Amino acid sequence: MAMKERKFTRVKIDKKGVYEVNTLEGRAEVLNADILDVSPAGACIRTKRELGSGVVVRLKLELKDAAIPIPCIAEVVWSRPDNKSYRAGLQFLI
Image (cartoon, rainbow, N blue to C red; front, side, top):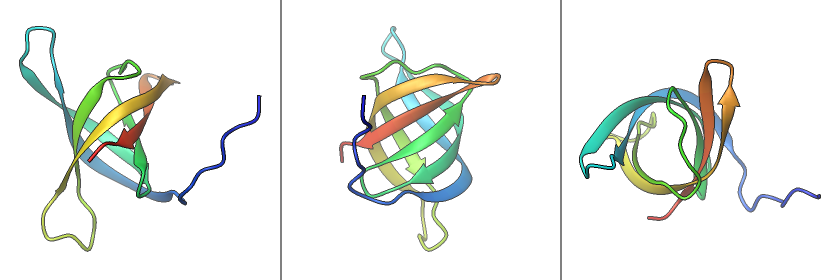
């Protein structure tokens, strides 16, 4: 199967970040992530927890030219094992 061509170029940033996801009990859980790359449409992160496709997360991006972290809401498009962690592709919703 041919891969879909991306609309935007990804920029490697390799930064530490945090994301928030709701638990089954309805509580917000804040977890650490490595933000590997970013584009206007989404990001790729590495985390210790597997994220299911369709899960919505709140992500804080710390970019060098931004005075404060940029909050984003994103949906997990894919997730796969990566050594002792997981990589996830996120599509920005807002």
